[in-house]
Image 1 (spheres, rainbow, N blue to C red):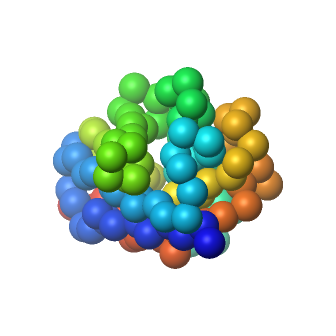
Image 2 (image 1 turned 30 degrees about the vertical axis):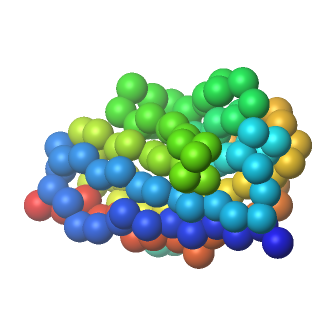
Length: 124
């Protein structure tokens, strides 16, 4: 059974950094793609980043490019999202997602398994 569990969210000030973690179980990271999504109040869930684990290829939304970094630690079955230079508009619930189809996508429909989410609030 595929399971994902996010952690690491919190309340930070603009310009701060946070690292989100997504611990996965029930599958091997090398054979799945992993995505990070976020959903702000009243908005659609949007793709933030994707990693094709077999090759390490990464994709980022334009809004986070240069500030966010996706990475993985296969030994810990964990995927990370390092978020730097956070802005108030980054405030959202952040979700990790997984799918066995290996091509990366920032489309919600490209992922079949989801975690429960972790809240990130950026405010002064």
